[in-house]
Image (cartoon, rainbow, N blue to C red; front, side, top):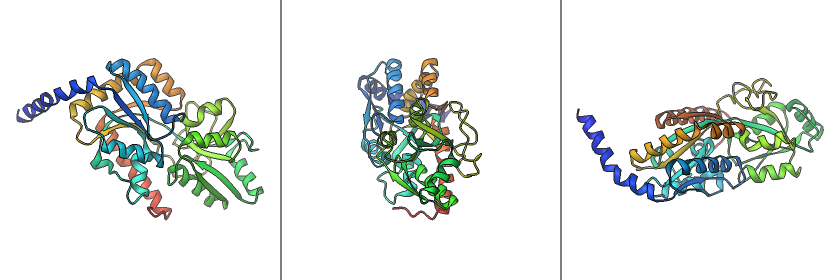
Length: 318
């Protein structure tokens, strides 16, 4: 009875803030440049959420440092329900493992709002690379003297660790070339400035479908529905990349539970709209709602899995 009364009082206390939040534009922070997969997803959600909430919803791109700049902006934002962070695993789970001082602590500075999808990272070949599969690409690199440049959207990222493992496993000098997001990496791939790149399926799928790039392997325990012809790394004998990354929304610490719940409920309604779900699926996402506790649990499990891989690889936080 006492717990119920406290919950009721907390909800009533938050109502003025809910009303205030409804009158202000909502910002969706994105840690990568316009034109990339995360940006496209955020803009799709912003459009649908604006109609659902009856409030202006804007995408605020803060590119750089693998989402670190956007994460720091979220930390500094007022916890009034008008600022949220659309992020995947790299910023929330990986950066705290590879940086001594990322400038934020997800457990302390952020509040999970909801997760809405998982996705797979993939290796893609540039159009001018004379290979049609991962084994063919590795054989081609060997013929080039065993050296090859592979683009990654950010340094000290899951794609970079994959490149390192591929090189070590096959005795090749594969060098990661870090970019400030997937968009500039893909631009260089389209211009054949680099022979290959590792990024998310949402980032790569359109150019793959247009036959400008060739996706040749994906992470995960099973093949992706939008790429049934592309094998997993595990199928190709490269284990350790079965855990799929996630997409979620986060708010600044201190955001009232009523505001978190309001936005989470709106997101749940939006991703279940047939049109939105179809468009997200076409981008290579496996759409599915995760509550705040479920997102927090998935983030912890994902961080723990990669902490083991990073430690085993001898990587030292920078």
